[in-house]
Image (tube, one colour):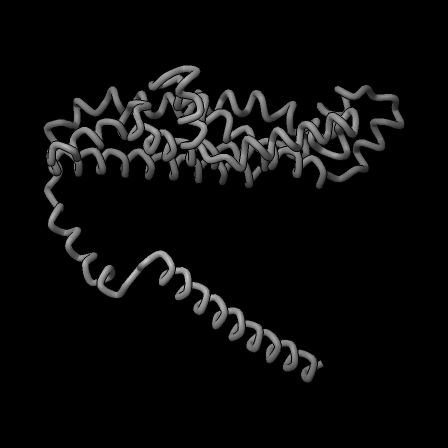
Length: 259
C-alpha cells in the first residue's frame, strides 16, 4: 500500500514538472509572439502617475449612473432567466420533448454563450442603437447561454428515482418538472443566478464604456478630459458596488446552503 502511494506521488510530481515546464515554454512563446518584453514590466510603475485622491464631491452626481448600471444588469439577467429556464429544460437529454428540439436548444445556447457580451452589443446597434436597450439585450442574450447551459446540465445530473416514482403514479410532464426536477436543482440554480448577476454588473460597467451609459460611460468621459480625481471617485463607487453585491451574494448563498 505504501509503495503504491509512493508511486502515485512520484507520478504526480513528474506530471507536475512536465505540465509546469510545457506551460512556461508556451507562455514564453506566446509572450514573444505578441511582443511582450521585459521593458513592458519595467514601465508598469508609471501607472502611479495617474494616482489621485478621489473627488468625493461628485459622489451625488454618480447616483443616477449607478442606478442605471445596476438596472441594466438586473433587467438583462431577469430576461435571461425567463428564457434560459424553458430553453435549459428542452436542452436536457432526460427532459427534452424530442431529439430535434434538444439539438436546436443546445445550438441556441452554444451560439448565445460563445459570442461575448461586447460583440452582442455591437451587433445590436443596427437594431436598437446605442443606449440602455443595447446593454440589456446584450447581457440577456449572452447570459441566456451561460445560465441555460448550467440549467440543462444540472437537470441531466439529477437523481432519476423521483422522476421514475412520479411517472409510475401517472404524473404529467409538468408535474414531473414541478415536483421531480425543480426541487433538486433550485438551490444550485439560485446560486448560479446570483453569480450571473454579479458578473453582469461588471459587464454593464464595461458596456457603458462603449455607449450603453451608466458608470462606464461616465468613466470614459472623465478619463478623456484628464479629470483623474473624478475617475478615481468613479472607481471608488464601482469598488463599493461590487464589494457590496459580492457580500450580499455570499450571504444569500450561505442561507441557501444551510437549508
